[in-house]
Amino acid sequence: MRRAILTCASAALLSACGSNGTTIAHDGNGGSTVTMGDTGHGPAMVAKVAAPDQTVAPSDLPAWAPVYPGATVSQVVDVAFNGATGMPGGPRKQVVLMTADPIPKVMAFYDQKLAAAGVKPMMSSDTPDRSMHAINTPSGQPDSITVGKTDAETAVAISYASGEGRLE
Image (tube, one colour):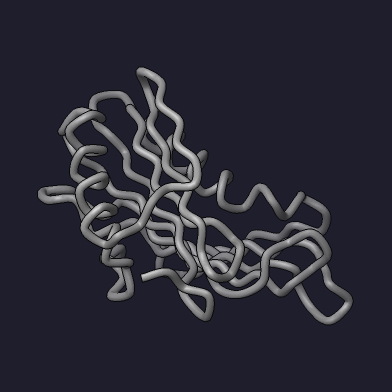
């Protein structure tokens, strides 16, 4: 189930790309590169997924989305969108964290961080098994934080712009 939530989190990040011309290449270290589509000048999107045993928190996490206290970094995905029609442009990252704490406690932590940074979500959604905030950014491609239940843990997926148009 844990692998399923990580795969779903990555799929959500990559869903804007479609599946036309998708290739997956695995490196010798347990990581992989997913390439999707074609802009006519190269791939529409390239995602690099770090190997599970080589995942560390990126140094450029936004101030409103630090690593949750006591959480482990489970997955890091670097995504480069190359501006195909209907797709965002620029680099993005997705970081998946795992914790034993319940969803309301985790979301309260991130609500506090958002408020401290002066960031107001443009959209929020809450269900018993998942909470999500979408945050407007200067680039127009929303950042997000999603907290959901897996088998025995809570997964935190943070998706954010990592280049120009970044929201601090």
